[in-house]
Length: 367
Image (cartoon, rainbow, N blue to C red):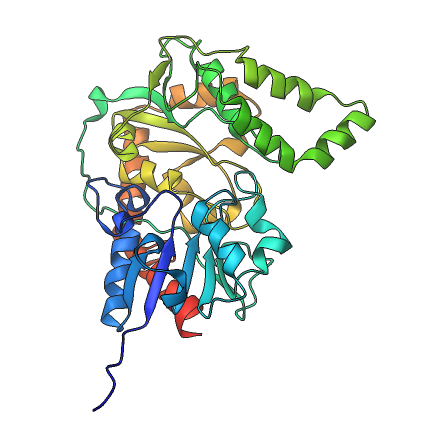
C-alpha cells in the first residue's frame, strides 16, 4: 500500500496574529489593514499544493517552511524558534517590513543568520541568493470608494501615533513639529492616533533606548545632551498638542479618514532609508487625499510627482502652508486627476499584491 503523501506545511508568525486570523480578510480599504495581502498569498500557496497556517496551529517540527513577518525579539514564538533553531528541519524565512527605526534587532547580523531566506526592501542586501527584493503591497482602487466632494473636505489631517526614536533619520519628531505648526493656523489640523497627549510607557521607551546604549554613551562623552533632553521631554510629554487637535485613535480604515480631508501630513517613520516605504502614501492616494509626503526616493520614482507634494522642497512649515493655501479647486482637481490616472494601472506594478505574491513564492519557496 502506497504511503499517503502529506502536503508540505508553511507556518507563518506575525506577532500577535494567531489562530489563522491573518488569513481572514477584514473590511478595510488598505491591504495591510485588511490582511488582503496574506489572504491572497494563502490562496496562491494552497493552489501550489501547500498547507498554510499560523505558527500556533502546529508544532514547529511539523513545518517544511517557517516564515516570520518581522523578527520581534520578545515574541514568544520567535523565542521558541531561536531556542529550537538547530533541531528544526524547516527552511526558515524572514519578511522584513519594519526599518531599524522601529525594529533594530532584525537588521543585525545575529538575527539575519537565523534565516535561510530573507525578503527585504533594502537594495544594499539584495543578492538573489539569500536576500530577495519585495515591497509592502497595496490594493489600488481605480474608482473613488468615498466620493466626498471638494467643498465638503476639511483642510488637513495626520493619522499616526506619537512615537519616539533615537535613530538617525527618524520622522516621528517631524510629525509633531508639523502638528504643532498647523494647529496654530486658522484651519487647524486633526490628528488621529495614540499617545499624543498621554505619557508613553516608560518600559517600552527604556527597551528602545537599550538598543542604543552605544549612541547614548557617545553623546554623553561628547557632551551632546540633546538626545537625553528629547527623551525626557517625550517621557513627560512636555509639549502636548491642543485638546481640539487630538481626535484619538480611529478604529476604521485610515483611507476612510483621509478621504475627509484635502491634504494629509504623510511622513514615513524615517527618511532616507533606501527602499523603505509603508502603506501611508498609497492610503492617501486611494482616499483621493493629496499627501504631503516625506520618505525615500524609490517610491517617489514610481509614483508620478503630480500625485503628491514633496515636503523636502519646502524650507519650513510656513512655506508649505503658504503653498497649500495657494491651491484652488481647479489646481486641486488636477492632483486628483493625476492620482486617478496612476491608480488605474498600479495594480499591475511593483507595489501590487500580485507582485508581492510572486516575489514571496519566487524568493522564499521556489528558490
